[in-house]
Image 1 (spheres, one colour):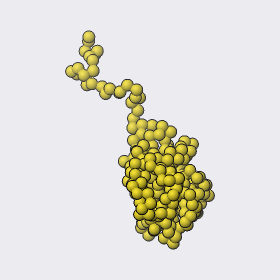
Image 2 (cartoon, one colour; image 1 turned 120 degrees about the vertical axis):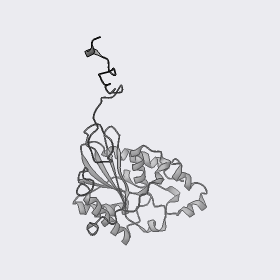
Image 3 (cartoon, one colour; image 1 turned 60 degrees about the horizontal axis):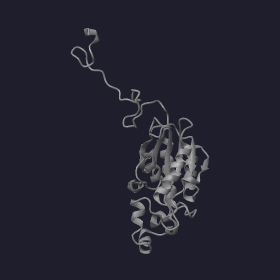
Image 4 (cartoon, helix red, strand yellow; image 1 turned 45 degrees about the vertical axis):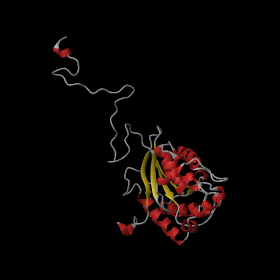
Length: 259
């Protein structure tokens, strides 16, 4: 063998990098620091998840699900909805600059989400489309009850509902059930080119959306903090290597006075 034909790794010729079988050796796509790692140029669908503002049930800590249309926002909730609208209006402007400005608003059919979505959509100059897939969990017989009341009537069942994820309240949904519903709902938004969709939904539903995006177990989703009128952002790709960009950012303090 002549010197020109020396095998890789021999003196005078450095070893060449080995590309694992089944990979293409594509270069990492440039993106904002800390963004999800990609090796292609696909532009995702961005979903901005907004929790509704405060209601009387938020204050009483009652389990307010999808089996009843109310309650409406209270005065604090309406102010929170306005703050959320301020924050969402900045998406693609001076916040998260790699995300397109929102072009669609979708809301759960519950009164509190419709009211919140109306405030957000008015700020964006967009109509509201209703999609029942983004409704809150159905708490069944627990509807309207506080955690103490549930524990008194069904001892030892509330904690497993949260931390196991597969326990169902009487006549209601498990956390995993909500996750399957939200998985289908997000798939309905996936594809169709780069765009940003605002979805106004609920605490358990948004936790489920974040959880299925990450591929984490339903029993872990209750560890995500999703405050009233908070904003979360997921980015959906056709290969399902999706990104959670924001989880539960509070909307207060993002308005003009804070700049």
